[in-house]
Length: 173
Ligand SMILES: CC(C)(COP(=O)(O)OP(=O)(O)OC[C@H]1O[C@@H](n2cnc3c(N)ncnc32)[C@H](O)[C@@H]1OP(=O)(O)O)[C@@H](O)C(=O)NCCC(=O)NCCS
Image (cartoon, rainbow, N blue to C red):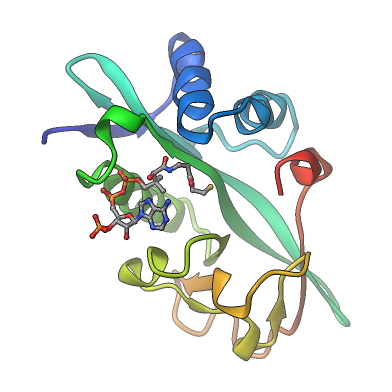
């Protein structure tokens, strides 16, 4: 199926809300996207939509987060939420969004990304479990559900600490 991943524009906001609401079956994630857009940390180039035939069928939001270490915070990114319209799931749309997002993040100079999510899904993009690398999730989750990828090899070498999400994520994590 043909779809194009691109940064969202204000014209997309209503459809992005709808895709998140339908994919998750509730509004918390859709509202989180709206809240994050209003924060100074928001990176518009890393809120991507998947478009097919002029319609928004998927969305992914990468946000800056920090790893709190004994020598101070280390900046990284996390993506959440990520949503594909239920009518278009399992056709590669989510994968296209992850790959486009990682590529855009790399281009913008970001060095690593962490994700909290389906352990069977993200390794295909190069994510590996984070805890064995000394990076702890912000809440109690199964080890394999918390993963990281280095966009620059070695970017997280020697970085040990706990990830902290912006307060806007409290309701959705
Ligand atoms: C997770 C999601 C974004 C994946 O998008 P997608 O376009 O369906 O993904 P792709 O087509 O690229 O990849 C499909 C793979 O995703 C994985 N996958 C999809 N949904 C999954 C789920 N609920 N649990 C575990 N794995 C899942 C499967 O491994 C599937 O592979 P398969 O078809 O070989 O079984 C989409 O299913 C979705 O919106 N789900 C509801 C919201 C959600 O859970 N978001 C992620 C957490 S923030």
